[in-house]
Amino acid sequence: MKSFFPLLIFCAAVFLAFPLNSLAEVMTVKAEGQAVKYDEAADVKKLAIEDALQKAAREVFAAVIKGERAPAQPSEYPGLYSSLTDYVLTYKILSEGWLAPEAPPLPQSPALPPAPLPQGQDAPVIETYQVTLEASIDMDQMKTALSRAIASKGTAGLNAYTIAML
Image (cartoon, rainbow, N blue to C red; front, side, top):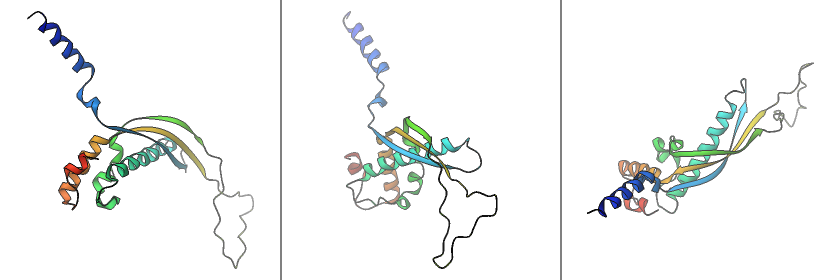
């Protein structure tokens, strides 16, 4: 009986140290996002990060449905596809910064020369902020959500078993 109690304590410590959700399947992807500065620069970095996270989550979503006969178009899963960033567990910014400013192309007609800018006015400059990050996406939760979306739509060719086998 004395040897049972230390074993019980050891098992409890292991379960506390390694919770079951740590066994989830996670995919780590690298993505790049950009945002254009309009008036305020405060939200530009945030928008670039959101763009990169959305791209990373879309890449994982494509991997989840790859090889299946399910439609992979966003219109097939509007609720799921619009909330893909909900499956981002963590992200790490690898690089960030402003890209070299560039002037937007001026609309031109082949018959007419480009119109001159008013005197003293420069061409507008586009300022773009770029972020490269590495994001960890919870594939298990994404698969579960996809299974639910498919079950609710009754999409032919897919069921919970084939999603679980991805």
